Length: 130
Image 1 (cartoon, rainbow, N blue to C red):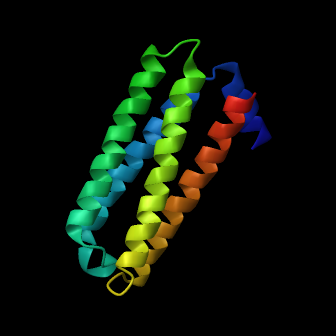
Image 2: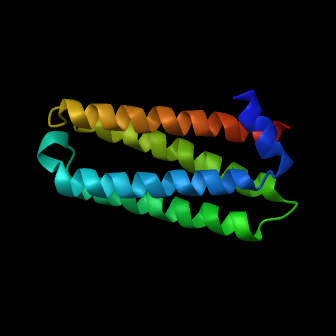
């Protein structure tokens, strides 16, 4: 992780590109889970649709920041860190609320997504502190 962090420090706004790509992958994977694996996930389709819309908004924000943010990048990164953490809390709450209907594939997917986002947030926080 130290090597990745040192490379990102050379161009700190590249963290927005990484975040944007991750958000896009979340968007696509939620749509795939919703359309192809819905019976095996168990999360209500409308919930997954809203989560995918949030991911798309985060993607657009991060990609935009990658292209336009300059010296004040820390403030913009703080906003996406906050959004990512709120997304994780929302997802945890939705998994708990819908725990009776969510299947093992759904639990695995949402758990994996949360872990990946927390790792990304950890890197982003370290970036803001450097």
